Image (tube, rainbow, N blue to C red; front, side, top):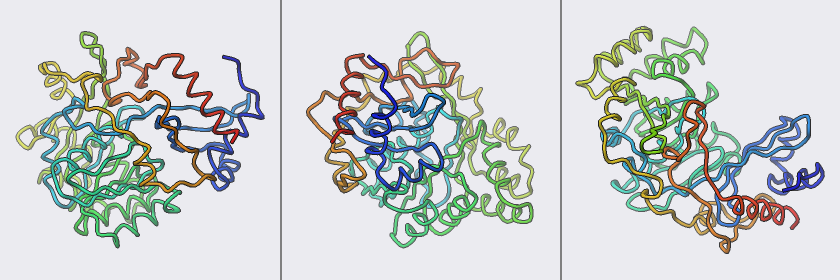
Length: 368
């Protein structure tokens, strides 16, 4: 199609963001948001370039997929037997951290009666409460900051607290405190290995505070799961390969003493404790036969009613979702049929007519 000029793009961005986020965008020159448009859940990044306003749009699925649907190790569900403590899901950008985190939430949702609270920026997947009751809060729509939302959550009696991403030291500190005070906390962190995740967590604090932080981590750690995606040519799907570090006695002792460099070797020798190095997990992948393709994964659920329940309609902040258009949602991003395995980028294959229809819908929302 034809390129859009700067003025309608700017008008569209203001309509999608609303006044508060637009003011923030005017300062930072970038903004992340999620919207449901024509029945399609979209994660949108707005940013400025030398050519003007630009959008990067990801089409997301509403989540109804378990660990099996996402081609993940079934034993991961044992992590959820813990009633308190910290589970970290780590990996580089585009490695599927959010999907693995969502699969763990859905396992809890299906198999336990838990009060689950998620704090995200933005909300990536909507969940339909099943055995559990799930509440989802988006920053800054439902709370001004991660810090405030975590503090509020401690008065809201959750059994499970999910932190979308830990970036700031104060968010990390509050997350550790929550894990120490009787909650099961799941959180994501950018890192390439489990050892790097622990190192990054500790080094985010001043050196004088690091011994206390290491002690906190050692006291509450359940496990660290670090992942990357690989492409299986014979199956034509991308699947996760994990490194799993359990909070064993040896691991906790190494963390407490600051011997972070010893964690990798402890993982390699910790098979009896349920640990997996990347190499060991890859051997499991090579032996696995029953892969789930995107078409076989759990059916999608309609997001329109969920968004109405979770996020009250506000014309200044959210476009109205339409259910008349054909859904362009796809299944779990961990199993996309893309051959870009080396790039770490998850490609979503959609018909060109669908993309044009989505673009027209976005434009019409901006004109209203």
